[in-house]
Image 1 (cartoon, chains in turn blue, orange):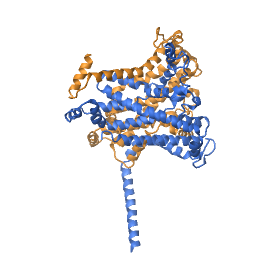
Image 2: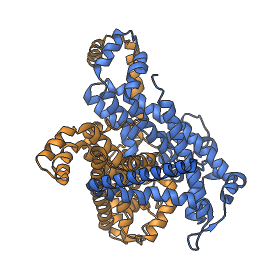
Image 3: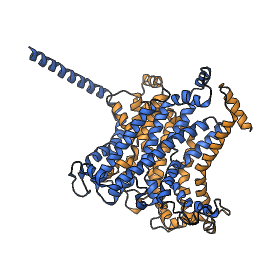
Image 4: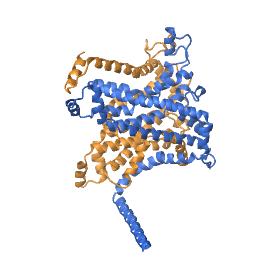
Length: 317
Length: 293
């Protein structure tokens, strides 16, 4: 009796699944023009963005040198990475220092600049938007920092300090671990006022002016209260988007390090996960190991993003 | 002073008291950071205009005294003496930027139209994959990317750079958000009632309406491709880009001489001018860039 019922239910469920599948298929056929529209982009996106993530996850468990077929080695790469590779641990530390310093600071700078220029007359606002945004799109103009902070007395910073007798011999800015990280943070902040900034500028301009009048009636007294109770909650979607842009950018600082401090930087003092990844991927051709590094970085980026999204969801609550 | 007064008046309308003191602080703050942002770029430009004796002048001066275009002339002289004719590097960069940008704008707009204005199975999955991909940078996928490009047999061809650029995820994201929020469904409906085919709706109605968005995609794509330097996919000298060639000059031991600065200044002009021209469109597009949780 019971089994009969079970079988009956099973058949019913089966039928339901089949029914649903056939309905979906009909839907797909009816909407085939949509797939036609989406396909060219999605195929390229999948091949060069999604598929590589899957391959990278897989290669992380192998030993692979590009020439021979990958050999499965289990979690050996990860054990070596976390237990045997002192430089990697140092690189994680440096990456986090750079990311924590540049990510949140750049995010707050973007927001603050956007907020402050929002109340200026239009012409001035347009010029300042360009001034703040320009360094992030100027390619490798950041190399000029290497000239400003050159290690001999012809460097602008050194000559200035020498002239006022603050130092007696030129400082090796990009070789001395004491100055390397602070300078890198300054340079990456300089190049980081990018897409998030534009998004905030736009978000602020889109806020309904009536909200401020209503808030004033409700007892909002000064501009700080206005910011917290009206402005920020009204532009929450932009805050979310900006966070994604800033976080992803802040973990991607690698090119600047190589360009200003050399590869590898002296005593690995400015070595980041990306530098480590490039070291194993492009120089030593240990692709399995490099993929494990890439996988770690991938999850760090995704988790940081997810956590910050959770935090931002509470703004103004 | 006049300016300050006017701003204050306009603020008073919102009924909130503000102090001159804080206003002054804000201006000072903006001035300081504005200088921090702009001075290194001014220094690069100033350096590119310095004659040789000023570059080696001690103590170094920030601003140029006797500006000269000699560095730029030298740059072009070095260019014309290079083994691969320089026009070839310029051609490569224009080709990659032009085709890559055009393809990206067209394919991303097509896909964004389907994702924003139609309902079909799998659409949410597609869009969330794109959003997820905004959360990691391309460096983490560079090894598999190399393998894929190699397997396709695209190493040492323009395709290796151009085709992946079509699939840039930021562009699709911005375009989809813009279409969703800026195009009323009624406009599309009435066009379909008149018997317009989906292709026609897309080209004749949607694309003209989203001009700010595709200008923005164009700018972002140019920013990405114009500065493309050395690339693992390209080995032949005659396929390499302008930025690669110029950075060779920068690294060639004469970096301190103004030629390097001249090269850097040349490279930054294009993205900056492109942004200046389209700034208001870009800001309009970014107003819909928000992300829902």
